[in-house]
Each structure stands twice: as C-alpha cells, then as structure tokens.
Length: 114
View 1: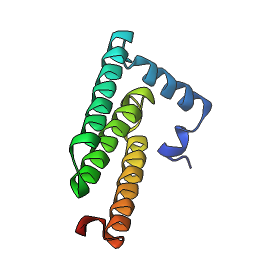
View 2: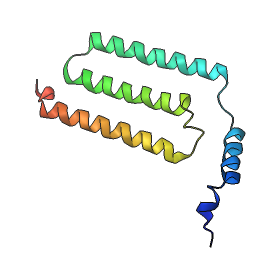
View 3: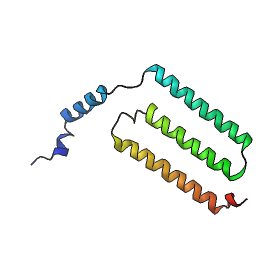
View 4: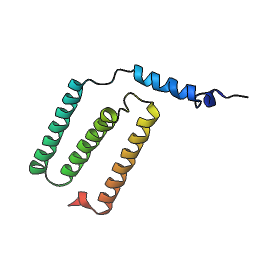
C-alpha cells in the first residue's frame, strides 16, 4: 500500500519539488532594490511617527508598520512567496499571535488609558 503523500517524500519527489521551485521566477536584483527602498521608506515613516505621534496611537502605528515590514521581509527575502503556502501561514500565525500577546500585555498595563 502506498499513499500519495508518502510518494512525495521519496528522493524523486524531493527532486521534483526542487525543480518546481526552480521553475518559479524569483525576483530580479532590481526588485530587491525596490523592496529595500520600500523598507527604508517604512522605517523613515516609523521614525517620523515616533517624533510626531503620542500615546496609544504611536504604539498601534509602530506595531502595524512592524507587522507590514515583517511580512515583506518574510515573503520576499525568505522566498516564502514562492514556496508552499503552509510556510507562509506559519509565519503569519506567529506574528499574529505575537501582536495579540503584545496588545494584551499593553492593555493589562493600562497603557491605552493614559
């Protein structure tokens, strides 16, 4: 008895998976530069926000921008955009849980009531 899932774990299945991932067009150096410029712009927005926004809005703004930057780095520089969707889901679940935990701790510390 062979299962269709176990056949993918054979050396031939692994080699086929590498060939499939090689068939996807990875970003060119020009695209990496664009992504780097986008990340630098988001960082500049974070720095500007830290000087212009106060209180709870600053925390939410910086957390949102950090999540956007995390997603960009994970999807492009770690090539998850081109890999199996399950890998991307693990990262999204992780950052979502971390953000939720952070916000709960801020609420317990009554940061938003100040």
